[in-house]
Length: 218
Ligand SMILES: CC(C)(COP(=O)(O)OP(=O)(O)OC[C@H]1O[C@@H](n2cnc3c(N)ncnc32)[C@H](O)[C@@H]1OP(=O)(O)O)[C@@H](O)C(=O)NCCC(=O)NCCS
Image 1 (tube, rainbow, N blue to C red):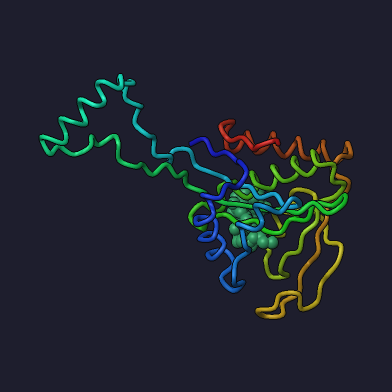
Image 2 (image 1 turned 180 degrees about the vertical axis):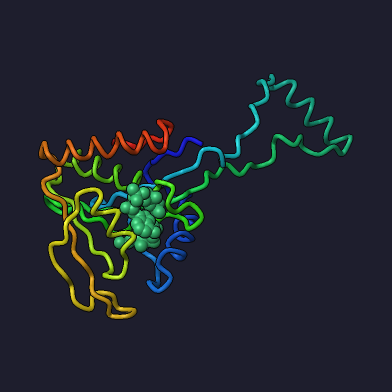
């Protein structure tokens, strides 16, 4: 099932909003993803499942314009419908999770990360986080930061696994229930020690989930 990560596109937004609603039911409205796509400071990525792609049928061999006119005339006189392969096709991929971050000066700030509930604990969150760490380094970020609910231990464990430490607390940060946010941050992501740890995690990830998955580096 090769899963892969690519940049968010406009046509992904419906699926991403669906995942956002499932993951953050009390945080409404969802981010304005259309606006985020135009935000120069923001980067959003999606993890996709290629098996869900509906392949388009092969293009019919090109016909000469003479044959095109003949077949159109035939359809006109016989009342035949257009051939099936001229119907519009649904070519959506299944989006399993998404994440976003903002680059602000030398800091990449993760604004969101979520995996579709049906695909949780299958390595998708890690794949997204690896991609963000690679992209942040390419954009010369020094550190990666985020806020996470005090009660969200699953997410905190994911971040801790990838070298994020608790560096502060924002009291009553979440408006729905006034829950505190833990502020987490990496060390310098380009440092040899951080990169060595990341390479080890990527190796362990490949050993666990197979080599078919590949994060983007762009
Ligand atoms: C947090 C979240 C993105 C993790 O995604 P995921 O695809 O399930 O995560 P993965 O399968 O890649 O798990 C990677 C690591 O995350 C941690 N983790 C994930 N789910 C966990 C759980 N239920 N309990 C404890 N740790 C968990 C573990 O450290 C795990 O590594 P391990 O397998 O070596 O133990 C997912 O639970 C989610 O979408 N939650 C709702 C949205 C959310 O809270 N986002 C974070 C906002 S700050």
